[in-house]
Image (cartoon, rainbow, N blue to C red; front, top):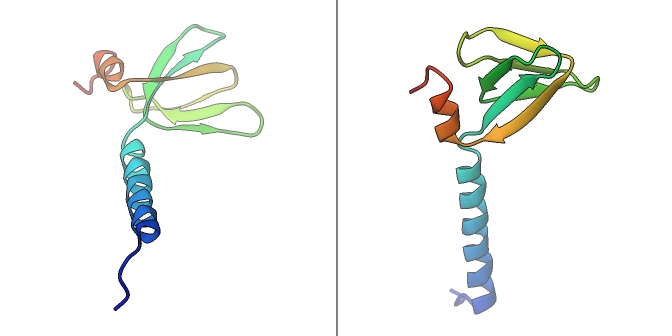
Length: 88
């Protein structure tokens, strides 16, 4: 059996770190969505953006599917999400 070289070891370590980072970063994302026309604010964990500029998501507080034509979407941290939703 061939002995692993430092180059091979570095490739293996890099691959493990890369997949670990991808796995951890994909765990959860939190968003604050503001309707720029009405001023209403919504919180969600997933936002679908259409080619026409509208966004569609499920509001964390009501469970309703919401579609907005004019919105501002901000990624927020888990603490802000929990503080503003019933997911406490």
